[in-house]
Image (spheres, rainbow, N blue to C red):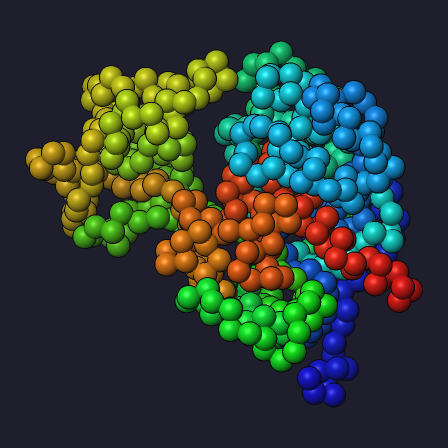
Amino acid sequence: MSPEDHRMNATYRSNQGNQGSLPTMQETCNHSNQVIAPSVPDIITTDVAIIGNGPSGICLSYMLSGHWPYFNGKHHPNQYLHQRLKEQAELSILEQDLEYLSDGLEGRSSNPVSLLFDALHHPNADLGCSEPTCLEWRYNPRNKIPHVVLGKGLPGGAWQDMKNSKLTLSLRNWMEMPGLSFTEWLQENHQKEVSDDGTDDTRASFSDVSKYYTDFVEAANIKDNFLSHVHVKSVRRIKGRNINCESGENEGFSDVEQAGLENTLFEVICQHGNEGEGQPYDFKIHAKNVVLASGISDLPNKLEVPGENLPFVRYQLNDLEQAIADGEITTSSDPIVVVGAGLSAADVVLYARQKGVPVIHVVRRSVHDQAIILKQLPSAVYPEYHEVYEMMKTGGDPARGYQCYDNSEVTEIQEGKTVVITNAGHSMSIKTSMVMVMIGARPNLSYLCCNGQSLGMNPKQPISKNNPIVTDQYTNESIVSPGIYGMGALVGSNFVRFLTGGALAIVSHLTKYGYLQKMRSED
């Protein structure tokens, strides 16, 4: 580093003020929805760089800021877990042996630490119980680990793009961050009663979730950790163990002789700037660790068929909403073609039917295939998705504006808004007003060598929902690249309810490796 670089170098030490218990939302509800990033120096030096400012990045920042979970002494329904919790109740959960605490736990996640945190925060949730949490959160500024959270938009990640009245798949209390009850936030934010009768209003609207995450960052006093409107251009290791990005093989060390957490250093090159708000500029982050928490919904999956690049082929519900709002598609238009059998495809079907727009629904599988998620959802909790699945099973009725073709594929899209649908070797052409391809998405990890493929379960394939980043299940650190951590959907935790366990694992690992002891000895 040049002398000039040294003069420009800045160490990112955020949240120096009081961070005690969370204030009530009445104390913070008047804040602006814009979380303003602090002025960004040319080089930021920190311990942890978190890429992604959605729920994963938010809850990790909360713990790294000095908020630690403790057993509150309440009886846990799992007597074996309760006994283990009592053994070292004076210690934070993250200071204890997570493998020992999570031993034998079962649930809807394959990660033992996620199951542990869920069991403590939502005891017996899978049995439909709403039991009080067994956790309390204590703030100690000496427990802070310096970090920065990078996001393309405002804190909340992809939820900031979903500000509508659609309901979450998860129950509302499963969407919450540590230390702030979602139900209590709803009551204070909306000044209305929130029922707990198990009906549809136990799910949250996308708009409420989006605002809740924004409010949480403000109420928890962690907003100074966040840099919004940041595009990450590259991440490379400048100290420590080099890994061949194609083979995943260890190539030794870059410029140090021995391995060790203290000898690992990454350079993250970023571009800061929001469209229409001045000239974007580049800056660097030097971090001992990098956490990948950017989710898997950056890039839509494609059909890879001729004509898919035509302008009437779209991949987001917002595109249909805008076309209807602009009068480009009406109730008398040719039907839209919806491809896919997941929740996003069902959302498009529901919206189109609500607006009276006719729909042709193309599903690759049989509608009776057990893998179709709409078939798995209980009708009492998800009546809107049950309605779509019932239409799919019957094949629909063109006279009522819906028709489903299962065991079928779109094989070509032609000029003149024509779609070719093939079933068992037989093809037909259909006129359409828009093709909505809703067959999932994949992450954009272009800032990593070879798009991060070496980190995956199958290093020869791109990272995806079916090929997640492989991490140690008790630390969330990459198996092949020390200092790189993954959390959230990138490591297979697709629900907010379970991603908090990833934050617990990461902070526990960093703490046990002596970060805090070293920092305190330097005070």
